[in-house]
Length: 150
Image 1 (cartoon, one colour):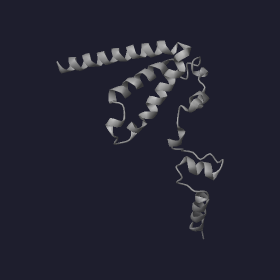
Image 2: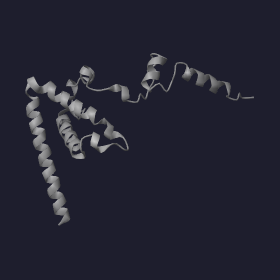
Image 3: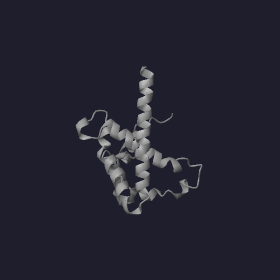
């Protein structure tokens, strides 16, 4: 009985998400509202970014159901180009489009690789944890304390 109830709830959730997807996909086909819809999704994700923390104030962000439904709709919208081997749709993706219009705030993203363009840029990318010259000073200290072979 419990399993049947869970399956019924799952089916209702999938049906509701499919309805949301069809409504969003239909609206995205209208060029007059496309940018507004994309901006709304970007805003919803930006305003709920705090949910990624281990502990967050639940009243400040959307509910679990809201985030699950937004994620489901966005994932379904990505299905045509999610496979890079498909080629046709995947080749039409412009990585520069995401950054256009300030849709994504990259300042909070941890930089994993130093660019080599300049210490100031790299230090600011990791939240000021590195000050200019810190890397070279640390490297010099390491080489000075390295024992030499006899």
